[in-house]
Amino acid sequence: MEISITRTTTPKQKPTDQSKLGFGNYYTDHMFLMNYDEGQGWHDPRIVPYAPIPLDPASMCLHYAQEVFEGLKAYRTKDGGILMFRPDQNMARLNRSNERLCIPLIDEKFAIEAMKQLVLVDEDWIPTADGTSLYIRPFIFAVDPHVGVHPAKHLIFCIILSPVGAYYPEGLNPVKIYVEQKYVRAVRGGMGFTKTGGNYAASLKAQAEADKEGYAQVLWLDGVERKYVEEVGAMNIFFVIDGEVVTPSLEGSILGGITRMSCIDILRSWGLKVSERKLAVDELIAASDAGKLDEAFGSGTAAVISPVGELKYGDKIMPINGGKIGPISQRLYDTLTGIQWGKIEDTFGWTYKIK
Ligand code: PLP
Ligand code: COI
Image (cartoon, rainbow, N blue to C red; front, side):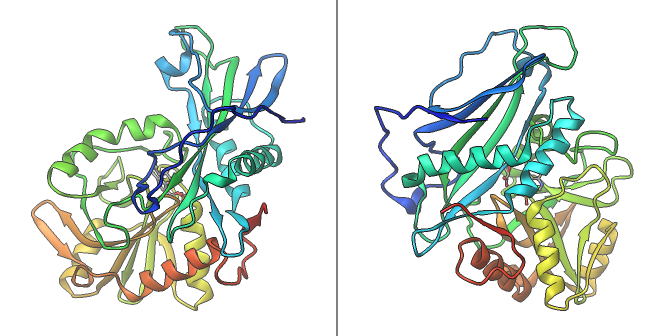
């Protein structure tokens, strides 16, 4: 399929201070759209000026949340090139989400081409300051005007772009998180492994309560026994316990992060022991009491590597590495961002050069 391109005649003012981009505050001049209609399949791919999308008030996405999304980034290299990080993995995950939510699958290679062309049209929007990038947000939503519950026959695939800096105001300074005991995010058999809006809607209440207590995010426990740690609001979680790097195994309720799988490969390439396994919160407490909870960090596209300086469970406060970033977290951050921004050699073959 050929992607048609209509360029804006009224480009927007770009943010002038790249140190104040934050996350998700600005959008570029163009977006990608493609429609699905039963009988026709996906059709009419186009890049058009960024604008509101008219929706029938009965559109099914607004009522039953049949919606999926992805998040990845384009990085400007020192020599003016542009890299994406493992877009094939994001598109494969998008299709896993599609499958779970009864959304017609997309052609993964074509979707990568669509992202590439859109980024190239808006390449002047890729920020260049340290730690900044262009966040790519592909998403698909159901637009049948129908208030009965059934899988949609009409959908829109859209991609928008946002120049971003750090996700947390803390940057690389450790964040504080607490273990959520009242609410759960997902259960096995549910949608936890997908990237769908409903998972995030389910997390808002806990997030709001964490905010009030001065915590950046919550650490979810499994929804059945409330015993095993799962992940954090917008990132996967790793702990270094007595020299072993441990991250919760993927049991269906956790999002399988692209950053998570990349971290595991990098850590193993250094000869470290990395275990994907069930990790009980009691084990964390015991490790903390024994002085063996060496480091903790989150991993995600938006969050990159985000060290955790304090973990709280009920009244128990567990400081980690004196509230400072630990050596493994720092080395991992340097290596991962070095590969993503093309500053160090990518021996894993993860970067995807689009310019
Ligand atoms: N877990 C959740 C709930 C997320 O929203 C994200 C971010 O996408 C992640 C984990 C990390 O996934 P990735 O590394 O693919 O960005
Ligand atoms: C990401 O890291 O891409 C995310 O989606 C996290 C958050 C913005 C939902």
